[in-house]
Amino acid sequence: MPVSDLSAEPKTAIVIGAGIGGLSAAVRLAVKGYQVSVFDKNDGPGGKLTQFQLGKYRFDFGPSLFTMPAFVEELFQLAGKTPGDYFSYESLDHACRYYFSDGMIFTAPTNVDQFCQAAAQTFQVNPEDLSAYFSKNQKIFEKAGWIFLNRSMYKLSTFLNKEALDAVLQTYVIELFRTMHRATLQQVKEPHLVQLFDRYATYNGSSPYRAPGILNSISILEHLHGTYFPRGGMFAITSALHRLALELGVRFAFNTPVEQILTKSGRVSGILAADGQVHPAEVVISNMDVTFTYQRLLKGKSMPWLQRGGEKSSSAVIFYWGVKKVIPALRLHNIFFSRDYQEEFEALFQRKALGADPTVYVNISSVHEPDDAPEGCSNWFVMVNAPADHGQDWDTLIKQLRQTAIDKLNAALDIDLHTLIEEEYIADPRVIEAKTLSHRGALYGHSSNHWLNAFLRHPNFSGQIKGLYFVGGSVHPGGGIPLCLLSSKIAASLIP
Ligand code: FAD
Image (spheres, rainbow, N blue to C red):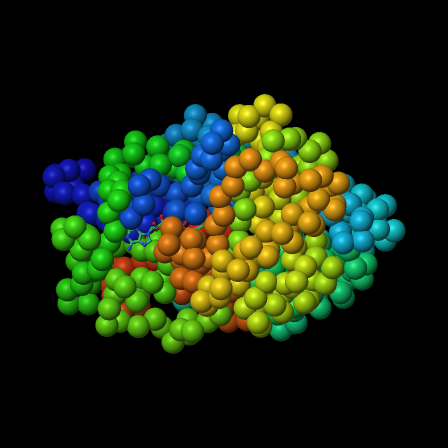
């Protein structure tokens, strides 16, 4: 090896934000040989993927559904470590228990064949129609999805190859221009199943009545690749990656907001932290929401026109309840659907309001992790999709919503939640924005209600400033843990 290589100082990289995108970017750059420092305004890692304690109950703050664990494991393998030494997870036989407004209940097997058989029996449909639905979406996922998820949409090389051409020719370009709902109706007509499949739009905070049909391929994540539960809860993902990063020599500065990305002659030169300290770097990766990165850290620069002013994804109101009872009917993931799904999404995106009868999602990690709640009790994460924050009167809305949600759950489960809730914390779009600096509290950056917003999100690099990269849920390929992990993979592939 040449002497100059041995004596060369490692290049420095700064990551702004220790969300899942930032942590995975830090790991990837450390493996590449960079000296990496991560700055976060919060007092620990994780961003939306954090946890907190409420009395004797433990709660994950944000994500509850874990898919594609291989994307997490890949980071340990890259670093030459054994993933199982850091984190483990169990595979779930059932994806979700669905409660419909007419009283029907369907516990959805994760396995696609079992799903088709069980759904065919429950809803009296032909299992082959359901298999055809999944097969088509699998094809889309494997042909087009894979290219979109693994490559930058802003590099010509992504499109100039046989694979991409094949995908364009075969991948039902039409699915870009008809909605998820319409595309589903082509193959499945049974209303309960249509509502169930339409729900996949919420996995990136969008409306099935507007998002492109190609996104029906999200169902493949759950039913072909499986759903999982990390031992110790979702936060175990954050702690495992944080530990890995520390072992790779990554430095973390918590409680340290970044105020400015510094540039010199069209290149990044470092960052200015809120304590007035300048930290030089050759590479800066922003894991901060991209809208806020431009507004607050890159004053004088504006977002590329394509991403300017796009509609935000949905946000959420979450009730974290310590419930002094175990309800045997409830599983890890439970959905209590609204009567009128279309009305619910119109309220969210057109009127920026809450639906009159919203769908309620209940996640109970203590079903799998008994230590998350005292004996005989359970920790309920009760989430209702909400519009992004546009200055609505949240305090009044939440008061009404709390009652609506309790009434709905009481009726479906024949319980009296008012007497069972012994601990409570409530998060709303304002809280999500304050905690994670996500513009308007949106869970997934821009919505994918328009195909342009779905597929041409902000690139993982800056076209204006050399050495500046972007990762996380607000940029390509999108929000959710698996996609955030891929954002850092794409960004790292662009960094020399
Ligand atoms: P974020 O988690 O957004 O973190 C960004 C970090 O950057 C924060 O820690 C913030 O403090 C820090 N930061 C920002 N600006 C600065 C600055 N200037 N200086 C210093 N630090 C800064 N995904 C799933 O896969 N499954 C789910 O079930 C799921 N459910 C969800 C439920 C809820 C309620 C929420 C909120 C999200 C959910 N998501 C889910 C989405 C998922 O959580 C996000 O897509 C993902 O965690 C976002 O990660 P990120 O890398 O974009 O960073």
